[in-house]
Image (cartoon, rainbow, N blue to C red; front, top):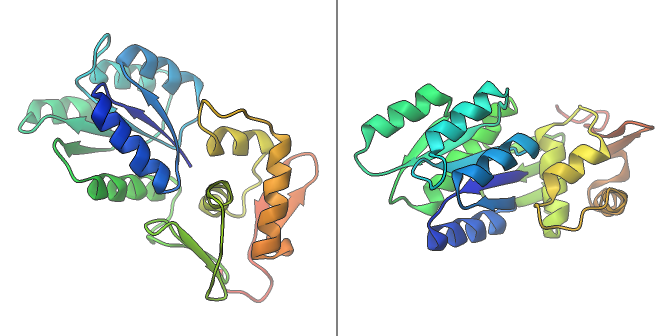
Length: 224
């Protein structure tokens, strides 16, 4: 899962990048509204954390532009304490949730998980595909109750597949949602990670749909 952080305070931006990276997300950062507007229009993020008080272009204007351009990515806005008018303006511009500064990182992560869950149509906090289970809060997964030892990229891949299970996902889409902007992207490496993941969760759980991509499925006899 890939997230854009739009924050002009360097210390807070570093803190959020670290926290989200540790939680298993690929993270990009925009320090001002101009870069944020460009990245949000050109990169396929799963969610965006947007500070409203930004240099160059304010956050509300950026959000309004995204929505006019048809960008439906879930957006969590950050507002100053007591600035109720900012919250109203943010929601009117198309925000999905808000958080008031200062905040606890744990709350931001929880709200982000909820946004991602709702946008993908999942009601439960944890993800399941038969006996394959994933806990986004703990960034852990298991099969038949046995914990899986996953690298960060394997975890991101499994998380994305489970968020969109039973849907065919192309290699290009996986590349766009697993790697941050600075990563040297190569769609051929997806095949390598798919192969590694199959060895850990069971080869039959990930179908190859020739010419189209991959699909995560429940095994026959397993509960959906």
